[in-house]
Length: 164
Image (tube, rainbow, N blue to C red; front, side, top):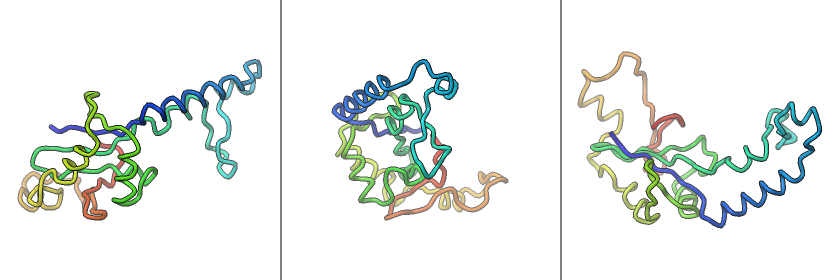
C-alpha cells in the first residue's frame, strides 16, 4: 500500500481559471443546434481538428495532476504525465512549487517537505522494479517483459501515466 500525491493550483490560479470559465460561458451561443450537439466544444488547436474542448474541459484540464506515489520499501515513483507539464527534474520542481500538493486523501502537504520526502523516499537501497525482480525472481509475473520505469535525472519514473 502506498500514497499518491497530486499537484493542484494555488488559489489565485483557480480563481483565474474560474473567471475564464465565466467569460467562456457568457460567450456561448446557447441556441445554436450545432454547438449544442457538439456539447459546446470548440477547436482549441487550429492544427489539430480533433482538439475540441468545452469551457468546462478547459477549466478542469490540468487542475489535478498526479505527481507520483510512495510505497514502503520502494523508491518514489514519479508520474511524468507524458511530459505535458515537465520534462526533467528542474522543470518538475518548478512545476511543483508553482502549485499546492495534496495526498490522495485530500490533505494539503507542505511543498518543500513533499519535495524532500519524494527525493529521499526509499533511499539508495529502496527497490525499483528491476532490482525487486532480481532479488525476488519467483514473484516476477509471466507477462512482465522489460521495465515499466526509467530513470530521468536520477528520478525513478513510470513509463505509464495510468498508475496509482
